[in-house]
Image 1 (cartoon, rainbow, N blue to C red):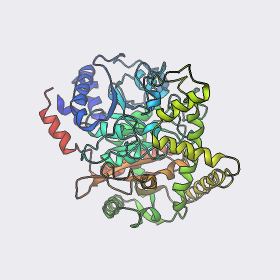
Image 2: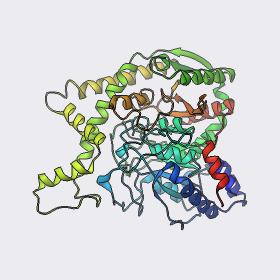
Image 3: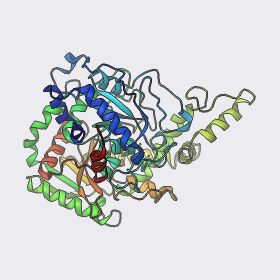
Image 4: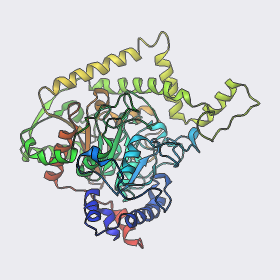
Length: 501
Ligand code: GLN
């Protein structure tokens, strides 16, 4: 039975539906194995109790889903920045330690109603700010392919939990690549939908105009099954805009029609000055695979690439400085109880100085600065203009090609500590992924094979806004043509051998 843990979710679900596997037993097995590998990888901030707190029978208003295939009865992980009722949710921050939300995020509620089980809450960079999970307020996560290396971030725990066979799929968040970059570094699939397609209700806000809930999985079909559950219009999120009757699973069957599609490779994002040579080499292999599948591959130029990181980091910090103003130690969390001997200002200062980590404080300071009178014109407003420029150029490219292509991460998974001395070295990890958030287009990272040192590399595909279903179909077409499939990291395979189910 333990070999089931290696399967993509859709295959294990078929066994459950065929009566060959009991969903509750599978959940318990999943939980025990997650605990068994956890000392090595540290994917989770909280693991669920042995007794699943909710029914395994699908109880969703399935009428609303009109017969679409949906993810059901599967153990899933949830990034700890997404609210879960009765299960601690800290956003990886000390300032929120002990906070137990009284409600579920809409995406979590839908997953539960579809009969899925929550394995636990995955580790992240504090409030989603980081690219390695080293800025977690608690502990770093390790890459299951090489424990001395980072899993990427900020959804590092989501990616490592899916790669290390601790959950079949994960919910993550993606403000500037946080689902896709760790997926690439851990050898799994990571998907950021169009803004608003998955409700942000219950997603702890980092930079609201860029924030998305995204999906980590082993195969594209699993992403589509998840989308059929969680991509729904939601009155609780004013920016929610999912088409009510989209069927992401059925769309995969139309991938044959995409064989004549045109993919534009963003030249500036294949620059050997910016990227590891092995990353470029594996991307070129992937392009050949796509070419052999009949897809038309052309090179396109996006000169705005040099503006992406400055624009993103100014906007994200500005929005963060405003969103994080609410953490005063009084309203949420138990880590810093009010000290009534102090006046209010001193109280705020004490809580915020000790409750936030260094990187979060850096972002709040930077964000406050770029928004302040006299500087907003020079920084924040210019960054907004750049965002519009980038979006316009991307829209222009999409009038010529159907999809855009780039590496997901310019680098292979790096050593823990390697990029901690200089924040700009960490920010440089995000050059390929922030594009989709700034331009508001859906994007997916897909495994593209292993480097000589046995580290995963990911490719990124982007589609015009709203064309999520077509993007998933293209992802499936690539997955099929490349025949890489999901691979278990060797050290996890060894742990599975040792594990007594
Ligand atoms: N690494 C980026 C940042 O620190 C992206 C984070 C994210 O997508 N949450 O802002």
